[in-house]
Image 1 (cartoon, rainbow, N blue to C red):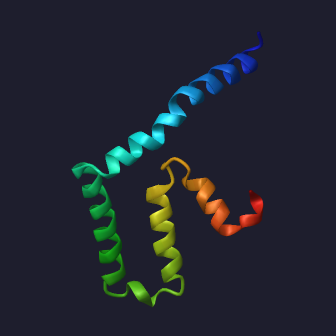
Image 2 (image 1 turned 30 degrees about the vertical axis):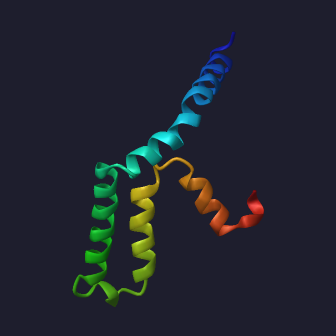
Length: 92
């Protein structure tokens, strides 16, 4: 078997085992006290960023906030697909 084909086969099998469980694990974590603390921290940091003196003086204030949130959420499973769908629902 060629290395690329073997790599693809291992990747597909790993995804078949791990992917169905990721959403369950993420949901369980986010509803746990630690997950709620993470959500609270992200929300607090975002609010403080909005309230910083001079933060709203920038022309791209909203863009900066969105980019900060995207940076924090980019590794969340399914997040990129949801962003793509929000940007252009015809991509599905």
